[in-house]
Length: 333
Ligand SMILES: NC(=O)c1ccc[n+]([C@@H]2O[C@H](COP(=O)([O-])OP(=O)(O)OC[C@H]3O[C@@H](n4cnc5c(N)ncnc54)[C@H](OP(=O)(O)O)[C@@H]3O)[C@@H](O)[C@H]2O)c1
Image (cartoon, rainbow, N blue to C red; front, side, top):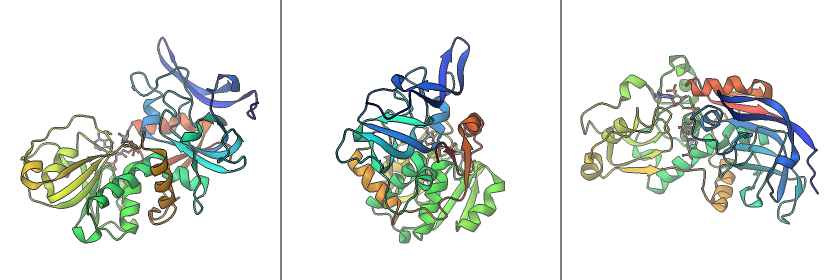
């Protein structure tokens, strides 16, 4: 028997003849998919992918109507899985959530037990969503770079899309770890905030453009890139010998214009970062680290709260490249 009320409030995106209609409406528990764990959602967050799930040709939504929201944090109210106790606090993100299965923009969700991450001690549900999928992806990027040998002694690390969810969290983790961090941002109004956070330098987007010589002066030991087309070619041709870039996103587009020279003459590496299908055991371990040694500096700052009624405005703003840190969605908290 379900512990979810017969109907509850949800932010729904539904394809129509003219585009996509979206907004808050009553949703029937009977229309949720089957799953072992029922959750009362306290917080969700806004990621670039969530915005794509609510627009025509966004190529994210696989069902309609869809409750978007690729991540959620809340309390278990029913569970068929003995290891997941009723009353426990959990996180879920990625896999099919908010894409082909109803996600976090609702008062309740029903999810597979294999997607559940226990909320680590040391993180509140609100902080977990201030990190969210974007911050988790930033942490994954840094872990992969460090697996390849990056340390603060290696040299400067470049972070692109620095005011975005991935970029802002990457900066906050790296400065906390003592790295010399350089932020690329198209928002001059964010410079003071980055200086206060402890970055060594700031570059404008015009300094890291896609066009350039096949190889340029070696500058960066590593980079965290979530922007893609506009910045990844620059990074590849300016990485130091043996350097690496962790590439997770395409905020400026998916194309990649490069030559093979950075790879064959400087031995640089392009590390692909996925957080969607990332295996659950490793995901749980990485969340433990996000509550511990990878906790971003100033976690909870640069966070804007919205409710379900004002979610549409945040989704539009992230699509327009206006992100300033993270938006979190207050639902049951
Ligand atoms: N691989 C994965 O599993 C995974 C997980 C999470 C996110 N992602 C991807 O990572 C990307 C970033 O996600 P997010 O949630 O951090 O998005 P976001 O909050 O919107 O941040 C993207 C940032 O990129 C910069 N930017 C936007 N448009 C740009 C353009 N045309 N040229 C140059 N810079 C531009 C902006 O930063 P500035 O104004 O500071 O320059 C913006 O704040 C998205 O493509 C997302 O789909 C992938």
